[in-house]
Length: 373
Image (tube, rainbow, N blue to C red):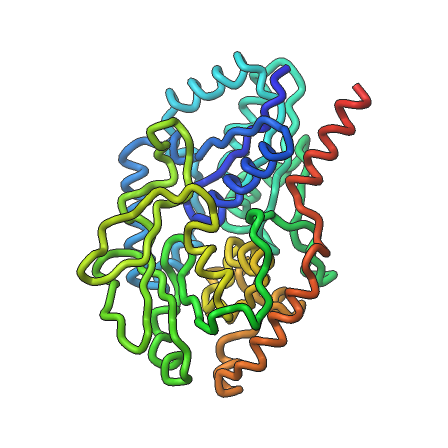
């Protein structure tokens, strides 16, 4: 049998893509062969274009983004049947047996593979939010028993106010508050959605300097009041491999009005926005799963903006209850107090090493299983 661990990601948000890359690298470092597949490679070009169009619409209107979550959908209508068949035959020929699934969209494909394979197939369904995100909710609506035969892994238990596992973002240590630059990172997740653009003036009026994520050249403003702008290459797509056939972190750069179009390759996660986040005093963003991973790994508190749907509301509640984040409105009522952020940072620093790394735990279980066989 093939010992490769296949990690099934999605480009519908970087929160379902970047954790897969991080796990691939962590497993590789632990001596386990791992490989990523991205769901959008199974979609027709017209459906990929629709995804791009949705991204732009959601950036322009958070209300449109929120409404989209309430519309039931069946992702199977977006699949290219030939692409799916090719991938399934490749997996069968290579005898792929072990999978980690980050998006509910993939389970439709995995179900077919389990029928086709003719040998045991093991898969972890890894939930990176504290509640089911839309891909999992749509899957559950279509198939209430979707998890049968799979192993469900939850990173968070909101009822118990606990973090059950974490995702390692790389070798860099979390910096103590005294070693940070005092700046605030303001972003809208991988797709650039939410209310973050409305907060710049208030934060600067409170005396903070900002590191702002831009999502198109048109969003890059003048560097007033110590503002800095950063951007992932807007032409980059999660479903495109690089020249060596690998999936990559998005090319990334600090950008200015006069020079917005040079994006060097991002070899490591620390070379991108995460490297800016780990030096910052706090992050102002919606409470996506990726934001939680970054916050915990870097020790950087979250100032939580309006959530993108019910699952992010539960993410937000959990981070506040754990003392790792504060809601923007509450912090604003406190006069944007620096000491409040420092206390959150201290809580995160104290939590360092408390939560087991999922990839390391997975590797241990794999080694134990191989020892028994």
